[in-house]
Amino acid sequence: MIIYKESYNKGDKNMAFLQNIFNNIIFPFPKLLKASRTINKKIYRLNKSTEEDPYTYEYASNNLNIEDKVLLDTLNDTIEKKKTLEDKAKSTLIAITISTTLIANILKFLQDINGNPVFVMILLLTIGFLSLLYMVVAGLLSLYCISEVNSVAVMYPEDYLLSEEEKKTQIADNIEYNFLNNLKRNNLMATSYKCIIVSLLLLIVFFIISSITIGFGFNSQDDVPVFKNELEVINNRISALEDEVSTDKQHMISIQKDIEDIIESENITRENLIIISKTLSRINEIIEDEPNSISEEVINLLLDLENQLGRQPVP
Image (tube, rainbow, N blue to C red; front, side, top):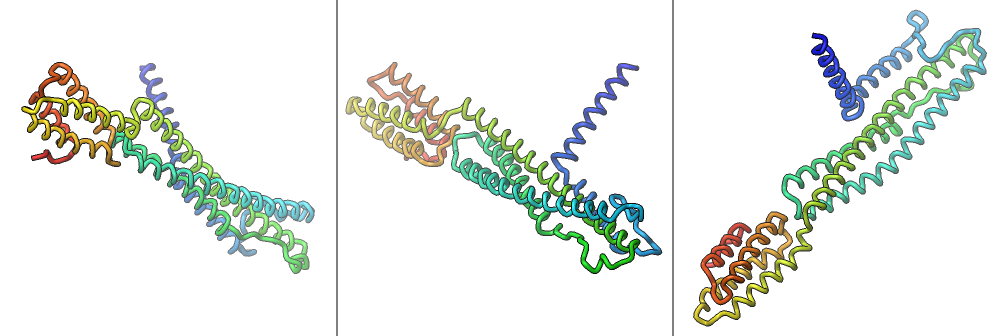
């Protein structure tokens, strides 16, 4: 029973760990929205506070024993913190712009590649799109931090004419207001950074999968000349045959010409080239064994190859 309990606890910890990663890094938007709503409610209560219904400070104080200089220094700190967060947001926007352009170009480059299997292409496009999406969201959060959360509370000259208690309350209100808005800015930037991290991780996965497929596969366009040369060799061998097989010879050359057109087309895929390679290897074996004749097997192989490549057989 103890073993089962320990195993169960480990399972709970692993599940909690994965859930924590998902909620805090992969999809942190609900937590951001919830935190923003909570802060907005506090700002609303602060703005609507009265002597009869005073606001309870969390980050400031209007205690009369605190010197004005201390409160004003704290207020200035909140203003400087706002500027720091905005500068970070601007710097992040520059990096995001460059990264977004890079990812978009990678996706465009990927669309021009026809050598990978379909499921690999779909996987890479999905990962690339998600990477681009997270980077765009990161940029939007940074932009929102700069453009929308831009209010700041300061002391105006007439505020210093207030009584000592009212003045301290005004300074405390300004500190609390700025601190709450800085919390919103900080949450936005933190979520923006998390989106950037996820985007970069997806980009790393993208490059790993691309490297593996390139390493274990081959570049279709690089192999086109090889297969074209093999077809030319077969054509030359057929052309050298006796006249009595001229009908079959012309038939085969016509088929090979169609296949040559397919090989040279831009839509050639890795699967196509694998089929072509196997078929040509078999044809070469047959011709080596029977160099002075065209067997039905060769004709059938070429016809099958043409059909598999999506072309109609020559009548």
